[in-house]
Image 1: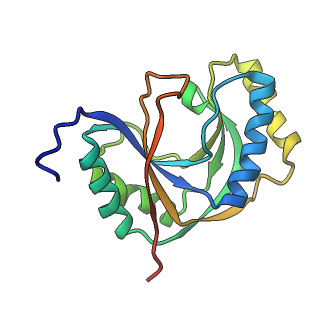
Image 2: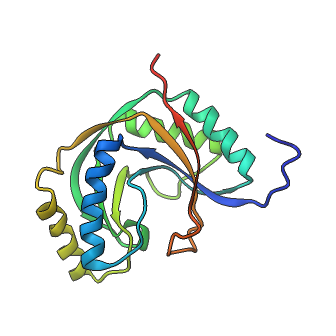
Length: 185
C-alpha cells in the first residue's frame, strides 16, 4: 500500500464486466427498462466485491493483486428476477458455478470484504424503488425486449474497480477507476 496516500477513504466495488457485444445487448435491455420505469444509467456488470470503504491506492492495489489470481471464467444467465432493494430492483440471475463463486471469494479475500449474506451472482438491469406490481411488469418486459436472454452465456475476462458511493442514487459520482484484464495460464 502507498504509505504516502492520505486520500480520504471512499466506497469502492469490484465489477466483472461482460465482453462488449454482451454489454451492448444488455445496455439495450436496460434502456428499454429505464424508458418505462425511470432510474439511473450504469454499466452492465456483475458485482464481485460489494461496497467497501478504502483509500484509492489500497483499492487499486487490491484489485491488481486479486485479478492476478483469477482466470477468465464463464457466466450464464439462468433467470430474470426482481429484488427487494434499490440496487437489486430487476436483475439477471447468474448460475453460481464454482468458478463464478470462487472468483468472488478470491477477490473478497484480497479486499478484506466480508459478506453479510451469501453471494448471489447477478447482473442488475434496473436500479429503482418500484412497487411489487411495477417490478413484475419490468421483469416481464425484460423477456419481451430480449426473448433469448435466459441461457445467455459469456466470458468474464475483465475486472473493474469502480468508486460507488451507495448514498448517491443518481450514480453521478460513480467513477471507473481501473480495469484489469484476466490472464489465461
